[in-house]
Image (cartoon, rainbow, N blue to C red; front, side, top):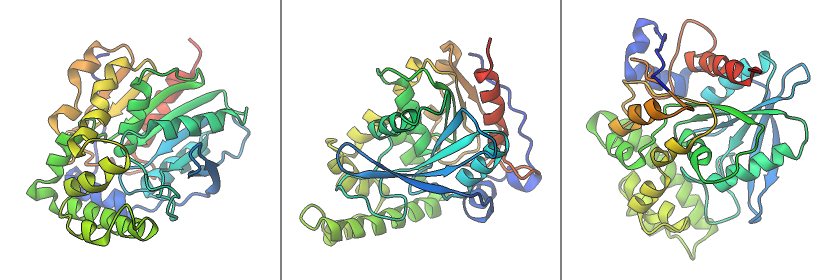
Length: 322
């Protein structure tokens, strides 16, 4: 598909990458009713879904996945849910393992390519026998996970009709290097401290597999992925984890209409996260690269964000009969 021309024209202050990124992550308020439902996984662990429901009966559901160390309560998730339930959709917002406010039961947790967990959630939703139309909306790490799922050699349920992904680090190793740059120091440290604190709790739960001393010896996100993410999820090392789970290598296999929105001024993304050549050859992958938006920002002079509007527009087109 040719590149999609973007119409995003933010207020002047939100043309700044840092302002857009920080505001959307910490200052935006978008409360929405959520009802929690626990999904028991095949390995005995669990994933919590936070549901928001349309006032009218609907056969459409939007499945949403948050970013690194996020949750279904983040403003970019609740804002999306609020907008979609007003437009006749139910919303199932996944909290990845260990991200719902309660440590999960297994030593493993979540990672950027944990598509088997998504598969189990989809099967759980389909078993409700309520939804004829399922759409995906993934943010950052969650977007990478969903893109990988759509491009893997698996049978995609016919009910999955379309997907929109926002601010996705399709190249995990390259994006890690971006985060290590001086201008992203505060962001990388914030992620590092959240992950470290999470691992310290996990060490109390699994003292024979992880120690406080090992965690405190880590000094970066790479160190944490080397110590825990790769080891807990059966990868040889951090680089092996990045290489096997970057969605970039799966994009050309996608057969569900998918819109990827990555802002050009997103300081978290490497050059490879703008797959222009792949989108140009694909029948199903649409690529939109607004000049502005930051990382999961896209604020405008409306209650909803630009990407929330774009998601609904895209789904309306691709859920309509030909």
